[in-house]
Structures are given as C-alpha cells and as structure tokens.
Length: 414
Image 1 (cartoon, helix red, strand yellow):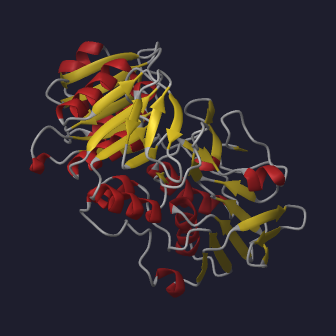
Image 2 (cartoon, rainbow, N blue to C red; image 1 turned 30 degrees about the vertical axis):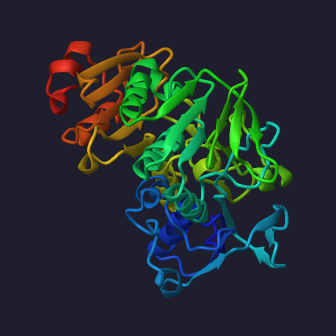
C-alpha cells in the first residue's frame, strides 16, 4: 500500500478527532483535514447529560486542547458540513464550496436524535440532547422549570431526569417500555433504575405512548395515547439516536440492517481506502462473530485511535469490548445515587443474570452469562474495585459458575 499524502476525516466528534490525532501521533507528515458541522472544536458527549447538565461544569471534556490542532498541523474546519462524496474521484465536497481530494477517507459523522413522529412533534420549544449547544439550552431551561416531561427512558432520559430533579423540577418520564433500560439491562436491573428515580420523586408513565405534543406556537405539554395530558415547561425528546449515514448511502456505500455503514473487522468499507468509525460503523466484530454497532464514548475513542494504523496498511481487527458508564444523582446532595460501568454485550432476553451484592442498596455487580456459561457482560454499580477483573472476564469470555461470580474472588476466576 502506497503511503497516503492526504487524509480526510469527515466528522469532528470524538471518533473523528481521535483518528486525526492518532494519525499525527504515528508520525504522518502529510495533509490531515478534520471536517465537522459542529461550530465548536471536538468534544466528548458524556458530560453533556451529566456534569454539564447538572451545572457542575460549563464546558465539556474537549478531545484535545485548543491549540493542539494548529500545533500538530491538523486543519480543523468547524461549522462545515460535507455534502457529497465522489468515491471514484476520491473527492469530498462541502457546504462552504470546498472540494477536498483524499488518499484515505475516514467517515465519522456520528448520530442525530431521533424525532418523535406525532402531531406537534416539530413544535418550537422541544428539546433534544446531543450537542454542547443542546446541553446548554436545556440546562438553562431546567433552572427555571417547574414541570418537566421526558419522553424516553434510556440512558439520556434517565440521566436527564436526575438532572431535572436536582434542579428542583417535577419530572415525569414517559416510555412505551414497562421499565427503564429494560432492553439493555433486563427487567430486574430496570426495576433498580426505576426505584432509584422513584425515591427521588420522579413520576413514571411506563407502558404508555405519546399521541401528540401539545401547544399552539410552542410545546407546552404531552398528550398520552390513553388521553391524559401532561403540562410541561420543558419537554425533552430522548427516544434514541439515528446514525448519520445519508452521505455514505448517497455515495453507494453499503448500509447494514442495523442502520450503520458496513465495515469489516478492520473498519474498512467496500470502497477503496474508505473507513467508517464510531456511531455509524456496523463493524464485523471477531469476538462476537457478527456485526456490532455501538453508540458509546469508548467505541468512538477506541475506533478512532485504532483506524489510524489501518490507514497505513496494517488492517488489524478492532477487538475492544463495548463499554459505557453512567452517573445518576449525586450522593453528596442526599438520597441514593448510582455510578456504574457496563462492559461487554449481553442479550438480557436470553442470557442468565447473576447478581453479586445488594440490588436494593444500589451496591452490586451484575453479570450476564451466555448458554455456554461464559461471561458476556458485567455491570458494576457503586463498586469500583474489580474493574480489571471484570474487563478480563468479559474480554476472554471466561466460563464460570453462578456461585463463583456471587462469592468468589473475581480476579482469580478462570
């Protein structure tokens, strides 16, 4: 493989910025362009729904210091959106009239919040949470809000509920599922999350759908499918994210069943010298023997760093297990709180749940065992001493018994 002269990265979030930085760290001296539609320099998303929304900080975690890009000769074009790919000509066009030729192309366009397709779903005043500007606007609204309705009971919805209660608002969470996060963590752990928020005064309307967003000129509430109306000063739509693959699809790249861009184990698309990473990558994961698309911080950072070597011909498979973390409520402010880390990839519908510790006390580690008896995933909640052991159990898919997980020394298993 010939040494590239110009690398173009489309998407200036954590994945794209990590890729650009890793290219330079490998000693590449050619041109590097990092093209992103967000007006801010690259930042990480987790603090937006945690510390920033709570008011503990006014800035996100920046991927690199402000001067890094200039000092490392990375041409950062913020507030510029790629509009077309011409793969045959190896060309990226943008909405500022730019035309950028490349020898290697990395697509890292991320995700956008899914809209709520109901009457009133496009009313002004509805909030979503994806960008720094979203988080700042929502925080400002929460500081003066009395009633907040959150549509969606996933990670963003539950973290936002914790923030809204911390700001003193009355909070109602609406979701069609019977428990929060049940599709990820299963019913038993979903009950733990529900109970945590109930203890803090959150009202639940679970198993119910949204018929409409109410309001004449702006959103003022939510009408449920059962007919009840929930008035609100703030309505947050948190029903998931959709990968931004329109650019790739229009260029003829293959879109997988999970909505992401099909890439092989080394993050390559079928097009010559074109790679996809982060939220948009439907990655054939050797550990699982199937495609995996993960919308979390660790995957964005890890794939960004990993793809840099493959741009120069290494073609090494990306093997990292999925990882994410969440913080909900602050123990220093009173009442229960959870900090947790999840490693691996479980199917709560078929894997066996094994709990080590006390669910009611929010002090436990949960494991999901496959039919082969191997550890598929682990979730530590307010327990921080076994992180390395949990990572090893998940990465090596170690076969254990339920009793060993509940009572054994985790670092000695396997």
